[in-house]
Image (cartoon, rainbow, N blue to C red; front, side, top):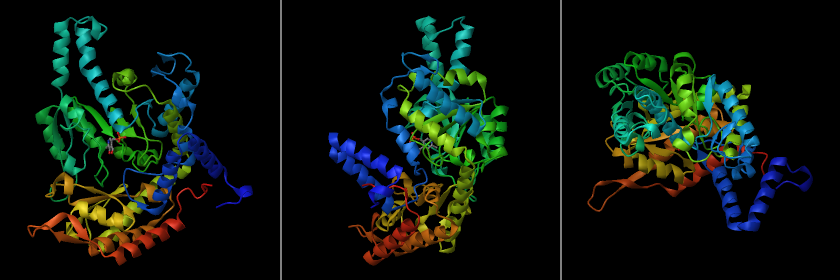
Length: 483
Ligand code: PLP
């Protein structure tokens, strides 16, 4: 606890905010404190999480939240949007500069929402607009019932290809449980069974046979770079719109780790992202494009598929983009990748098997069958030892999507804390010693359980202690001491 006279601004800001919250509902203030304690006591290796700066967090909690602002800056369906217009324009300009994009839409509330905006703008541009033009109409309301029915049917007849889920793709890339799979007829491409690396020839063959309207690239669990220039060539050869979902690796694009053929912005027609993963902003989404014809439809995201824009979150996005434009962010992005490589080598030298044999980005996918465990057991055992990860399918996973055979580890959060490559070796040791010590139990029928295990309490305690040591040396929000 700090003395009154040398208390930091960050401590004052959050402590006073909690005092104010307590006057309405003290339990919420308690849970906010509890969450901070929790985050400070675990090694966070969830590849999709990070720690936003105090400035980003504070920008979210204010009266911008009270304003309705459907529409775009200067073209709102509500009066009184002067400052929302300014903050949205600022966020959009920062995003354009950060990513070298001609156009940036900063309203999506999340990555899923950003993808929906992208899908609808592609359909509007490629299907609806030409249909209206061929019928001499300007608006869907001007179509006859029968023409409208024809157009509706035609939306449902469009095709998409995306990366398969077990290769690391995302549910929103045309898979049936998600609305994208109900909208599009989808086929997926995967990885080479030997190398576990993307097979561009397979993408090419599939594209030529299936003739999709949209090719989606991007992933949530693929530990390698993707050659977007190659996929763009394939897309052009079949007249498909090429969309990249860079939700996971946007921070590496902003930090210029992924450039040239590996840069999604200069290679795709449309790019979507979250803002809260490696990009280290508030929870939210963005859509970027260099294609003027798409921009006019992306702008219609709200109210086409989005609820009213969250001005407080757009303010926080502007803060996060301003932070990501600083030279230190480039250093951060390259440290994220170096840390992932160090973590991967640390795990491999301790007997772990890495999917694809390594990593070129912020994440490492470990096949935990070598430790005699399922992903579910590994995830729980690591939580017992103070390490938070998530279980994940590996390519051609024999254990299915619930138990899985893998764990996904990501370095964005620990890198934000200031950890480096030596720390990653210690993290690898904590992980591997925990996984080696965890033993699956038997089910009542004598089979090896896929969910239950035993882990000696001494290992749990000693590894928690080691995780705690790393966190004490690299504290979360070092300037923040709640009073
Ligand atoms: N796209 C990809 C590739 C993701 O990994 C995720 C989230 O994990 C999303 C989209 C969805 O993002 P959100 O949870 O913000 O909707």
